[in-house]
Structures are given as C-alpha cells and as structure tokens.
Length: 233
Image 1: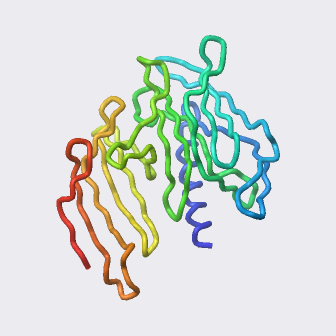
Image 2: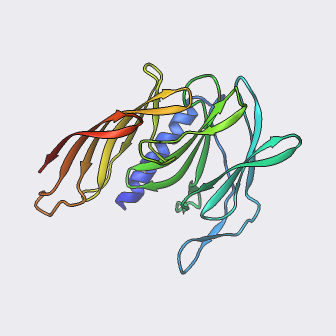
Image 3: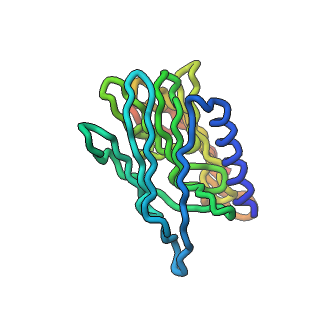
C-alpha cells in the first residue's frame, strides 16, 4: 500500500511538470496491453508497440521507440530514408491497476534548458525513486547522446533535476529503513556530468535499535567520488 502511494505521488508530480509546458514537453503514450505470467513477468498481448516522434531544437530529427518485451525497448533514428537502431534500453515493467503503463515511461523535454528537446526514459522504480536514463540532444552531431554517470559507472540517474542557474544536476534517492539513501550533485559541462558532492546514509547494516547506520560525505575528484567524512552510529 505504501509503495503504491509513493508511486502515485511520483506519477502526479511528473504529469504536473509536463503539463506546465505542453508545447515543448510530452509523454509518449503506448496503448499497452499485457497479462501477468504465473512464473513472473508480463507477456505483451499487442505485439506492435511503436511510437514515432520528432525531437525539436537547433537540429530536428525523427525517432521512434519500440517496446519489444517487458525487459527491453529499442530507440531508432530515421536517417537516410531508413530506421537505424541507436540504443537498446533495458528496463523493468510495471502496470498500475488502471492498466496504465508506469515503467517504462518515455518523456520528451528540454532537460538541460539549452533550447533543444531531449529524451528521458524511466526504466526502474522503487519506494520514492525512479531510475532515469537521459539522452541529450547534441545539435552538432544531430543525435541523442546518452548521459553517463561516470562516478557511479552507470547510465542510471536517480530522480534527476537540472538547475539552470549553476548548470548542475541534482539527484536523490530516499530509501526505506534498511537501505541506501543519498543526495548528489553534478556539474553538466557540454555532455559530461562532473561529480561535485554527495551525501549518503547507509542503513544496510543497521539493527532494530538504530545502531549500525553510517553517514558519508563525498566530493568529486578526477571524475570519481572521494570519501572525505564518515560517521558511524
């Protein structure tokens, strides 16, 4: 019940954000029909789940996303009169009680506020976080560049938000009592995310009395996280 409530909050926040700028931001809607399998997972009952869309900006290009199964989708770009696969997205699969697809979800918006639309893909959710893959529109190469989180050696971003004032990306993961929570900040320079600082609360070894929790502070150094402070409870 608690998980469903938190997921509903995330959905309402996302939908309100995109509703504020309907001319430049939109969600790709797939009319997904699926049935839950007894052994786990889902089987897609409508086989052709393809959505074509146009990325606007200094350079305009046509793309499409095809949901191939409950575990992966394919992004393609229309170039030289044919569709060329540019990436395969691995994701989990979650449908709400209303038979509305929640994960994966795909959004077109100007993430880094540079006047070019980008692509954001929700690939995994849990408690109060959504793992997001960010594809930034590079007008020079006229393609979508997948933003890597080199400090975490991952392409997943936890609830990323961009701050135009200082060109930083803020990420946050708020987990349950015996998991890992953190806030982190990165400087976005062109299409590279440079780690700045990270505060982490590690409750993975905490007992029922509250002992065993660890708080850590990191700073970015040479593209990686360097631990500068650790406090054990």
